Picture 1: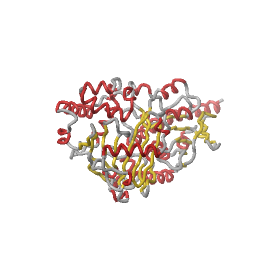
Picture 2: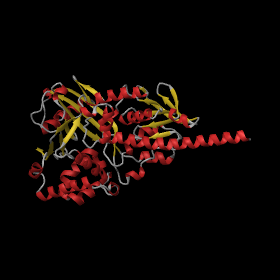
Picture 3: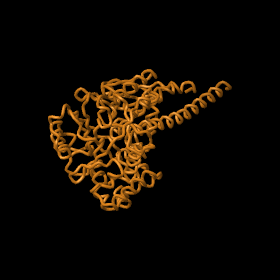
Picture 4: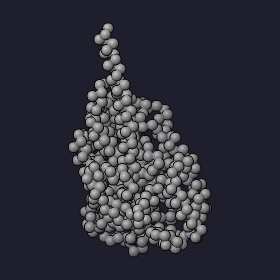
Length: 462
C-alpha cells in the first residue's frame, strides 16, 4: 500500500447513532471512503426523534450543558451551536409520599427527609466528588460502601440507595464508586456558571433538527449512508473485512468499526478470541423502558423530579417542557417517564396498554390532580442495552477497541470509562477513537509502503 493510497481506504461503520455518525464524519474529513450501515430507516440511535401526537421531539430525554465542549464544538461545525437556548431549571424530589422542591440551598436546608447533620454530610459528599480527579481509585470501592463512608448511614439508606436502585435495580450492588462520581460530575457541570444555578440547553427542534443537519453534512462529506441495512456478520477476508447484510448483500471494506453494544457486537464479529469474548460478556448493562407523554397542561415546575419511593413504577419524572419553550411543542407539555431495568426484564414484554395503566397510577401518586383525560399521546421506547455499569475494576476489563480480527474495531459506550452515557461523552469517545485509529493505521501503512519500496529496489538491483 502506497502512502497516497492511505486516504482512500474503504471504511465501514456499523451503527448510525451519534457515535457512528461522528466516526464516519471524521473519517470522511480525512479523505477516507466511508459507508455507514444503519439497521433502522433513519440515523440517530438513542438520540433519534419520533412523533408524539402532533409534536416531533427526542425519543429519549437529552440536554446540553455549558461544559459539553465536544458536543458544542460539533454543533458549531453544523452551524447550530449559536442557536442553543439556555434555561434555568428547577429540581423536585418525591420521598415518603411528598413532593419537595430542591432547587436552591434554602430549600435543601428545609428538606424534611434528613436532619441537619445528614444534609451536611450529603452536601460534603457532593462537593468532594465534584472536585475529585482520581476516578480510577474509586473503581475498586463499592458505591454503597463509599457513600456510607462519606454521607453516613441515614442519608445513604434514605436517599442514595433508593436512587441507585431506581437507576440500576439490584445491579447497584455491583457498581463502583466511580459510577456515582460520574453522575455527580455531570450534575455539578450544570451549575458551573457564574450564577451557580442549574442551567440546561437545547437546540430548537431538538435532535430531529440536529440529526437532519448532521445527515446532510455526512452526505456532503462523501459518506454513503445506508439506512435499512442490518449487518448480519463481519469477518476478515482477503486482507479486508467482509460485511454481510440481512438481505443477502455483501460488501468488502479495508477496515470496519462496530458501534453496537457488546452483546450485539460479539454476535456480529467472527474470529474474536476467547479473552475478547469474555471481556464483552463481563460488561453489565442496564436497559430502559421509557414512556413519552404529551399532556394538555404541565404537571409541575420541575425539569426533573427524583424519586425514592419504591411504590412508584418509574425512575424519575422528566418534564421537558419545563426546559423547552412550549411554543416549540405546540403549546403542549412533554413528559418522559424512564424505568431502568436489566436487559432480560419482563418489562420488555409488557404491552403499551399495561405500561400506560401502571405509569398513570404512579403519576397520580405524585400529582393527585392528574387524570388520563389530560393525555393527548402516549408512546413507549424499549432499549435492552443502554447503560454499561461501572462495576468494580471496570476499566481493567474493557475490551480493546482494536480487535484481534485484522481491520476490525469495536467502539461503543462501554469505552466511556470516566463519564455517564450522554451525547457529549459519545462525541468525545468518537473524537478520541478516530485519533487512535488513524495514527496507528497510518503508521502501519507507512511501514508497509516502506517495505514495498525496499523490496522493489532490491528486485531492480538484482
